[in-house]
Length: 326
Image 1 (spheres, one colour):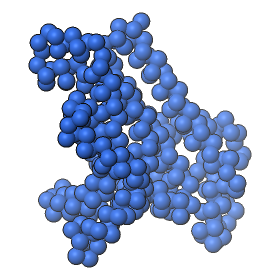
Image 2 (cartoon, one colour):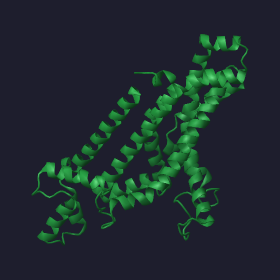
Image 3 (cartoon, rainbow, N blue to C red):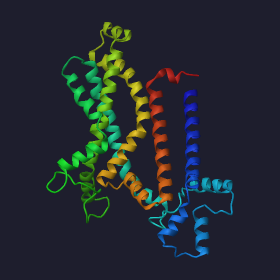
């Protein structure tokens, strides 16, 4: 219990630090976001309009930094991330809300599937070392070294484009109206398969290698020998004794690797012009849409923190020693 309390306190502090840094970034950058919006309007704004924009974006120079900070926190509690420059006057939360489901579907499926498949194959490869399962090692080592976006570019060149099996870009076919019907769902799935496959193949390979190595180490422990001596079945020893203990470092590694997985997914979205948060981030950089950039960074940080907290809860469920702590 004390372990969970400490971890929860850590994540709350980290979330507060992320919010504070997100508030400070636009104010530490040279110039300010409002000047960028004025430039987009080609200077056709009077003094009163410029002053209104500063107030609108929480950058009013007549108020102190502390007042701006607490005003920013208050707006966040109400889900207000500001207004997008590129989609003005659309709120940032609405812009992110349109692209976030695409990224969650892509990242959620590939991350969970890669972890489960990679861990399962790693268990078999480690438990049956010296057999045909060792043939997986050279292949997985090679695939784990390939960046997501590079494999995506290769996949587009080989499998996509005119006459290819998969579409090269976008989230659904032109002319299809997004809705909960089979025409849209089928089109969205078809556009998602190739980017999902590139992420799945690369990230899964890393889990195979790490789990295989842990299984080899655990298989040499005394309690495995005792389990065999008790006459337990091979399957039970492998899953209940070896795999359960070997899985603990992989769960911790999953939490540590999650940020890299999300970053790699964003690069894949850019390569495939997939309408997720990563592609939205790429467009926001090109448009110098500072409020949208700020909102995306905050959403990414809080999402990764939430996923790490979930990984910690799984760790507690797998390791009884943690539950007895304190």
